[in-house]
View 1 (spheres, rainbow, N blue to C red):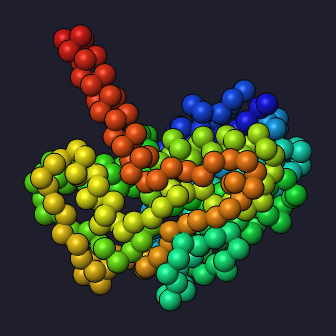
View 2 (cartoon, one colour):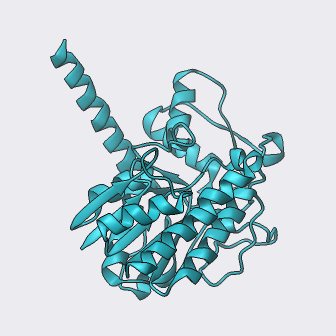
Length: 298
């Protein structure tokens, strides 16, 4: 099987390239831009993949509020370009979406399922929801994967890291740590997500599927879990979201759940703490390896 991974240098894309079987080709900026339909057509015509995984996205949620045109150009129109060209070549397409397609239901108390109505509260969520629709209408062989709270070893290029790395950096700088406790999510590692996507690809086009940690927590609990493991004794002050102003509005609840992974015979993602600990162990090993390489080079 030949697979093209768009956004191959990002957190998820890099893990996908490592976990997918068969012939995998990575595509990313600056050589490849989903906003340019002719470039998408030329690249996929040359590769002729069986599957295209579209991880390309403008993911900086606050920046999307000020760069609306760019957000929709990448997250929506770009998704349409990819899905339409994939359809022309008979390739299945996998579009990576987000928990932020939800949030308008302020009375919600349980994680969102695949059957729940959407309602984004920010530009990022709206642009990704449009990308879902444009992917689905482009052809019949599609899978839309919604996920939540991603973090991976490659970091998120558009954000300059990820939440885990930010918490550790602030702790090392001995800066006060204040994290919102009234927003609930399902933190998910890109390594785990990549593995589930690989399994979904083997099944074939699956429609809409939620893939995220089997449990949920507040951002504050996630932050404290990071520091308890890596910086024991460092505490995080819980605050309300109205005490931490951001350009974009965030949902009070965007945690995901669903049954469709299991419908396809695929086990759900592990609890968020298990994935986090695996990530932190891998991170520590990478740091140790790099330190050893530097010493050997000296």
